[in-house]
Image (tube, rainbow, N blue to C red):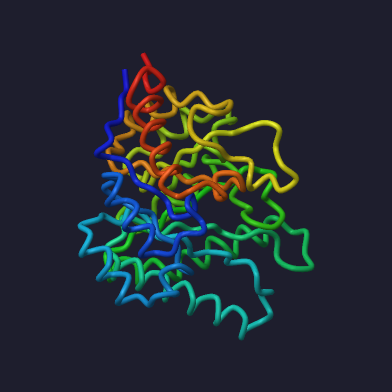
Length: 286
């Protein structure tokens, strides 16, 4: 039986998309949510120093910073584009260190513009992560490779299964590179339990939301509150726990209706569903 207590709950900023960083921090304080997952654009709106101050004043833990990556956006022959992408990712590592984030989430990027060569894209991803590792180790930041659902392979991530993410992470030191287990992207995988076990010691983030039907035209927005959709969280949570992960569990929801709701109502629902599904019977697994 696996039960996850509310002391491990983290609210990812994406769930309350229209709230700025200060508003999201205040929301966590009002609803007794101990951690937050940050997004770089919302940090940039108020500046890194102000973001750090707001987080510390509220006593919040930063469970993740999203995102680095998109390593394939510049053609291999575009030296300036690749240099700019590398500089941006180095900046992301620094921001994660300053914020004290448990991990910098990497969304690795889709096919290289104008190319259909998956092998090329995946080699570029591996090379780019390798370039980040020394800086990540110097600053004490763990990079989290997030596998995305295969439907996003062309434009968002050529790392399209947890197994691929684990294979890639294992190429690098464990203190520098791990994997993100995001229920929305991996729940469908028949090999999931085994791949989570293979990721033991490498899981740097566990993110949850539900797969709701019907999917909207933009499938990225087809996520709902836990308990509203098709995912059986018990076995996934049990496998993640068995692999040794005991960190924060982020609720990350991309959904137009959730975004349109009052942020306080959303935060309250996040707590209620987390307790009922992950902390109660829905979180049990034998």
